Image (tube, rainbow, N blue to C red; front, side, top):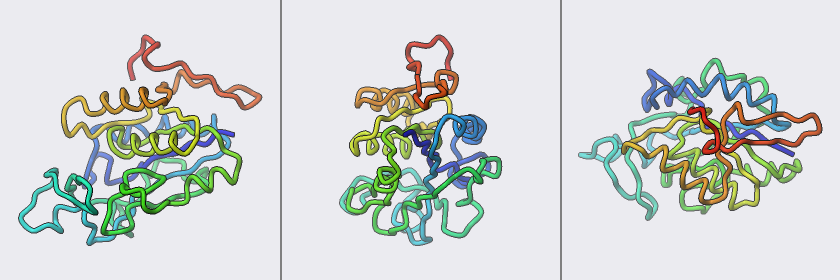
Length: 223
């Protein structure tokens, strides 16, 4: 069984948001289209307390995008974003939320960040996503969302490590690109780890429930 994992398609990561990803809202339409190709649909949601340790505001004298340490791990200091109960933490209004069967909050512990939808960055605590998927017989996941070089990548790599066949739909994702080319490097890393990198057009819904994908690097079109 195949599940679509919608990664952090939230207002703060879209144009006008506190941590806007360039063209972040462009992932919404393809994400909605991909729902037709999957039997199970879930979403991850950044859901930070105001005192989260990844926020630059909570480190006097530090600025957004500087590198620090949190929970013994290297940590980019971000602008405050996706704070629990704020409009920025809500899903993009055009996302077809009615079809999402379960939402998995992440980043709720102020002492450690959580890029992955499966675990915190220290892999000390599970969100329950992997267990929930396995209980429903899911063995294959398809990823779309934000951002390619952080939360999509971390979720994809943890999906592989958890035993799921994993496809990342490149044109249904966008990158932060804190350093130019980070998004493309993330796709290369995911491909090398065993992910299929596909496009929306390269995913065909077959009546018997199988999915065929045309790898992105074998197609002529660019996302």
